[in-house]
Length: 470
Image 1 (cartoon, rainbow, N blue to C red):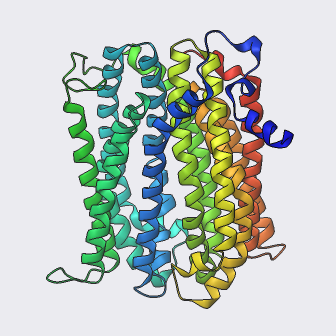
Image 2 (cartoon, rainbow, N blue to C red):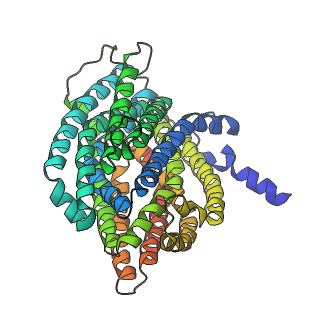
Image 3 (cartoon, one colour):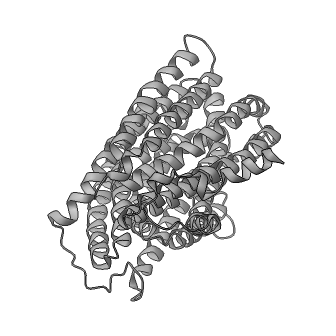
């Protein structure tokens, strides 16, 4: 009974903060978790749907034959690299809008929204054109093999057309998250997923009067889903009574007052994105050199691992929004409490996922393929994935807290060390000189997650992030 009592006490507000750090009245424990989950569950569902649609894409494309999973998967890191500036901008948008929400500055938040739309549109249009023009060298550098390069090129170039719509939708949704409205982002992604899956079904294998387009069909479906999501995201900004609305009296111009806080956060977030993408890209290239069987197994396992990332990302988005709003309202104590509440929820979710991953270590890979070599290799690595889950979800939530506070410099430095240096080096060492093969790549990934968890947890615990002003 004493043990149960201690465990339950661990989840209370009283256990989350030291008395000397309290600056005002604290809400009941139930209220804290209720507020957190109110913001978190739409984001978690959204992230889960995004992860699932990626998995469904992989499953449906995998039915076309050998090399098709690799053709689609090889485009992932180049796409994310091209979107890295947008991701960085959106981190700043979420953090600054959250601060303005905490300050009850509706006009300031809407001015930031307008600036974000202009910046996102210009950046994404340029990125889309460059990606389309230089598609061949980009994919070859990514490690695409000759026998599936044509399919990869078809998929990637169509994907480049969708980047403008994807970026604009992501930016609007980032602003909405900062205001605490995560349901809008969830709804847009539900619509995008329905459109994507529907046209995947119709265009990949050619159903009815629709042509059989194979990998091209999957890319077109993704593009149509992005357009649908963008239209819905834009439509949410025409509500007069919403905190963020294009009908407000805020200006459209971009000035120093608007840019300084965004750049302060987004600049460091961009550095983080650069290091992350370099690390992930190098990691993907090294794994691709292990051969098609190993690479397709890896892509399938990454889809499965994304389940834990999805839940962690949902909790992270909530933590980022609530931490930013709390600091904007000059309640650093509540920022700490929301951060720790997110970490505790992440631990519970991860515990469930560990059981699922261990129990389904053969079944889950078999959903993607009937290749017995891939299933056998994947089922062994599923044990490593289960072991990684707790550290992954926790570090994602803590990173969200730090980003929400504007402490993106530290997150960038930890990413540089762990993702851009440690993970690729360990992957090379374990995969090739030590001949661990694909197991080595996943041991390296596990080490990266544990290192980032340790670094970010130390930073969160010292509390310096609560003193950052935006």
